[in-house]
Image (cartoon, rainbow, N blue to C red; front, side):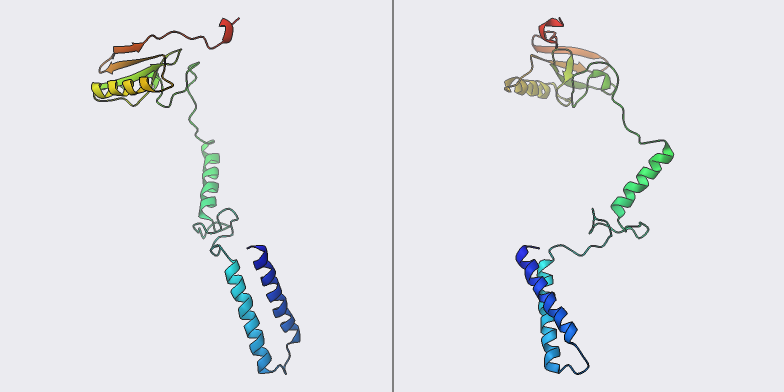
Length: 192
């Protein structure tokens, strides 16, 4: 509701309030029609001012959300959250996946070799991070497609130092290497 709407609505409600003070048993019909017109004007202004749907819950966060009749605030979303919290208390706390404590590892959205499933007939494009080989794309079923992916990676402005293609069947076999992997020390001046 903007300031002009708020001012007009306040004025219309004050006029209606003044009519209420003047009402009596001997109020003529012309005066009642005037009160009716002022009430209609106030309702029209109120209808213009309301921009959102009528709230169906008593929840401040989700006023028009789904309704749960059993919830104290009628909000299904908040009640679901509360039920999950109560369930977690009974189950011994939330079940969060803990990251593996394998030491230093470069972050990768695809994971490192130890995180991968059992071998299948696949071609794995990997890049050298300066510390280890890391999967740089989704495993491919076709060798040519994997080589084309690595060729595209090499053309990018921020290409890695080296890439390799690993054939995975019953074991891992490095098929081809692009570039020279050099072990990079992450500490400046060689850990001095």
